[in-house]
Every structure is written in C-alpha cells, then in structure tokens.
Length: 104
Image (tube, rainbow, N blue to C red; front, side, top):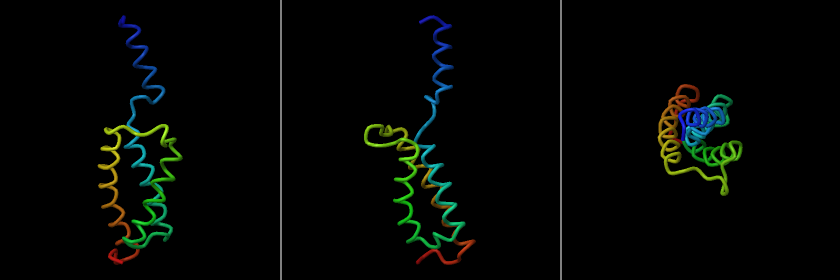
C-alpha cells in the first residue's frame, strides 16, 4: 500500500470513529445517566445504584448501537469494566455528599 493510501485510510478511520473504544464510550455514557439520576434524587443509596445500573447499562448500550449483532470486543469490555469501577466510586461519593448514608 502506498504512503498516500495509508494516510487516506488512517484519516478515514479517524473521521468515521473507527479508532475509538466503544467500551470507554459506553462507560462514559452510563456515568452521565447515573450521575443525572443521583442528582435528581432517583438514586440515593447503594441498593438503588445496583438496580438502576442494570437498566442504565442496557439503555446506554442500546443508545450507542451495541447489541447482539454489534457486540463489543474483549478490549472494549476491559475498557468498560475499568471505567465502571472508577465511576462506581464517584457515584458512591456523590450519593454520600448529596444524600448521606450509602449502605441501604
């Protein structure tokens, strides 16, 4: 492949979003929804966080076009898991600051 074609292919991939990690994008999208729910008072403790998370994860994946026919790769799943672990700590802190005890 000539240098020009290689550069064109790279630019096209970047332009179309082919180099992004959908797992990280999914984690970020889940975080936005969960944070909004915590701020709105829909989530006030750990139990509600766990219940809402399952629904939000499904909703966010659907919104990003991730489904059985368009699944994430193992690398993307790893990025999702890392992001969620980070965000779970942030959600717990936010709940504690806004609503108090997070144990219920």
